[in-house]
Each structure stands twice: as structure tokens, then as C-alpha cells.
Image 1 (cartoon, rainbow, N blue to C red):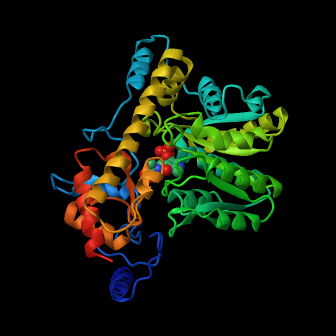
Image 2 (cartoon, rainbow, N blue to C red):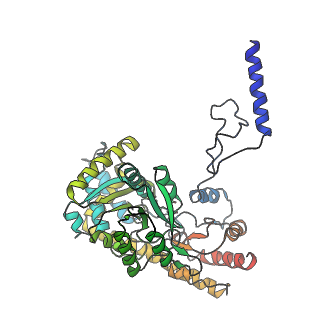
Image 3 (cartoon, protein in one colour):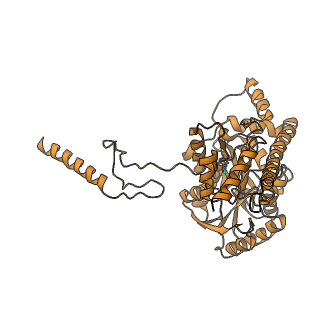
Length: 444
Ligand code: PLA
């Protein structure tokens, strides 16, 4: 009795001294050094509150703001001119067909997903006439959108590839580093963006990849680079391709925006097709979140282009061993929507028109924002707004200016100054232009 109450006392004392001692919390909040506060009896009392995600956390902050003029330009999610999320017409049609088809069941898909979906996805990114597809050199597995495709590819590389280092652009989508690190790869960066020219630092890129160890993996954004909106020209892609092949580096394409950069699916796949045409190997992670507006359905695909059909089929057998213990097999609904659209001529045609309309609306927003800043004589050269492509503008606004815009104008964006052009409309452009003007004229 006595000993148990004194040990309880000891514990309380140690908790109290924990309160008083300085805390050590690691950056990601996974530290075990923090003392418990209110939930002292929980076995998780030492769990430290983690910070919100730098991109998805913007939406959480936005949702809490009661202001009627608030504007969410954080996450890259398409909105209509009315500021509403958009379900594509072709998606509604495909869903109707699926629901009315009584022969459809809800059985498990195979580990690698829906066979039709995989074939059609490879065709979409590599082209209908791709020799790699015709030669069965490509293995494609359905994954949980772009993120899941990257992660499965990363896990496969960590298990089966001799080089453990992956080079990602600086800057890049915030999740890239985490995905590859958690899979067990070593992440390094290569120079990509030049803040002075607000364009591509091709020289720095070539130098950094040129000094990468032979065989290193290189992450490339297939088009519409996130967050900068800066893509290499075709000539620059060719320079990058030659360097990558000459050093036997392994390209890993992240294709999250096919169709969103130019409005053309083929145009936006040119970088990938250039690398596949030379017969070398490569990885491609595809997402249907943006180009079909299937964000929450989590539909994507990982394709690995190999040198022989035999290697491709052995690679696929190993991908199954990666996937099965992670999530067993992927969900059926979203992939069925995609394959229904991709295999029907009319639906496919209608999709390309809807996609083009989304891309065009974004381009119009760029022009309107640029004009609005010019009309206000906002200091600075804002031509990058119309030069950059894809969903985002990398404005060049600094963290303080972003904080100011959120506080004073209720405009929400990531702290690196990235704005989602897809979240803007003709109605909200003046408000954003006022905010940018005020930010750059009042805060250095
Ligand atoms: N790759 C890149 C380059 C991306 O920008 C995103 C999404 C993904 C992959 C993953 O998308 P998915 O898993 O939904 O298919 N980037 C968003 C959303 C649009 C996010 O951060 O999750 C962004 O706002 O940057």
C-alpha cells in the first residue's frame, strides 16, 4: 500500500518537474521528450501536438475564418467562376452508367488494380502508339492517386534498386521529401528555380545533376511544376534527358497535372514521352485528382518502363509484394469512372473539352490578375504571373506579406507565396490584387 502510494507521489513529482523543465520537441512533433500535461494518465501522454500540413492546413485555417470575403488559394483544387468545386459532366455520366449497370459488383480488385484502367492510363501518358506499350515493356499498377503512386514507386526502389539517393527539385511539392525519406531513400535537392529571373535555373540544374552519383534517381515534374509554375522548354528537356541518360540516372516523373498546363493531354506528356522514346527506363506516377477532378476518389497509377518484357513482368510481381501489406488492393469506384471515360470515344472527347475549359479559365485568371496589378501600378514586374503555367503562381511574396494578406484581407495561401490560380474568379481578382498591392507597398 505504502509503496504504491509513494510511487504515485513520485510519479506526480516527476510530472511536475517535467512541467518546469525546458521542453525538447523535435520539428515534426514526433519527439518523446515532452512531459504530459492534462492527460497524465494516458499511455499517449507524451504525444506532442504536430503542426498542420503546410498545404492542407491552409484549408483548415480558412474554414475557421467567419469573414464573408475570405478566399482560399492554398490547396490546388479547381473552382468554377462561382467559386464552387466542379464535378465534371463526363464524370457524372460515367457514374450513371456504372450505377445502372447491374452486372457490376463490389468484389475486391486484384492487388494491382483494375486491368483496363492500368492499360488505359499507360496509354494516356505514353501515347497510343507507344512502342514501349506495344513491346510490353511497361508495368502499370493502380495506386491511391499521385501520392500513393509515388510512395509505391519509392518503396519498390528502396527494396530493389542499388542507388538509394533521389534528387528532387528545389523547391518542389512539400510532400515529395517526406514520401521518399519515409520509404528509406536519401533525399537531396537539385537547383531548379531562380528567384531573380523567376524562371528555370537550367545551369544550376545541369550542374547539380551532373555531379550526382551514377544511377541516382531524379524526380521530375512532368509538367506544370509545383509550386513554381516554371517548366523547362522542349530544348531544355532534351538537355536534361541527355545528361540523365549519359550518367545512367533514373528518371521518376510525377505527372499530377497532365492537361492542366497547356490544355492538351498530349502536349503535357511530351517530357515523359521524350524519355520513353530513347528506350531507357523510367518511373511515372500519374494522378487523376486534377485532370478529372477526382480528388477524393484517390485514383492514380504507377508505371515502370523497363528494358524488356520479362523484366517488366518480374517488376510487377514485386510491386504486388509492396502493395499487399500496405493496403491490400486499391478502391474500385474511381478507377471504374476513369476507365469508363477513357475507353469511350465520346466521353473521352467530351473530357478533353472540359479539361481544356478548366485550363483556359486558369489562363484567363492569370491575365486578369496581371492586368489588375498593372492597373493599380503595383510596384514590381508581375509578368511571371502570365508566363508561369499550370495551377499555381509562385508570386514572389514573402512570408510576412502572406501573413499580412491573410490577416487583413482573409486571403489564404501557402507561406511560400504560392497561390492556386484555380481558386480565383473574375469576382475575386480585384480583392486579391488589392491585397497584393497593399502587401508589397506596406511590407518589405
Ligand atoms: N504531385 C504533385 C506535384 C502535386 O502537386 C500533388 C498534389 C500530388 C502529387 C498529389 O496529388 P494526389 O495524391 O491528390 O493525386 N498537390 C496539391 C494537393 C494539389 C496536396 O498538397 O495534396 C497541392 O495543393 O499542392
